[in-house]
Image (cartoon, rainbow, N blue to C red):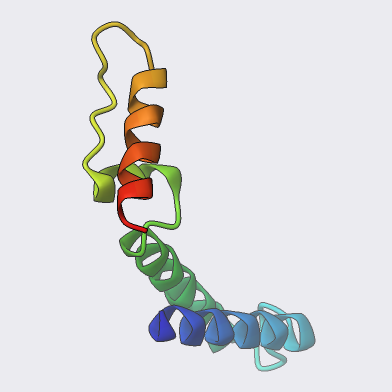
Length: 88
């Protein structure tokens, strides 16, 4: 979680640097903050997925089978609620 927060901070700082200085510097060179932003964005996405912060990542972490034969998701939802109640 700490790594995710740090990368979000880096991402914001890089974005602000691009807003302040532009994508291309006065020297004509590409702003290095663009590469920092790209890298931090990729790391944020990867870390968020590993923490289950997207529906697909949560499903993967919970090992929920999404190919239900009868298409009834009520049973899956009830099962998850039941499992959640058992933990408390």
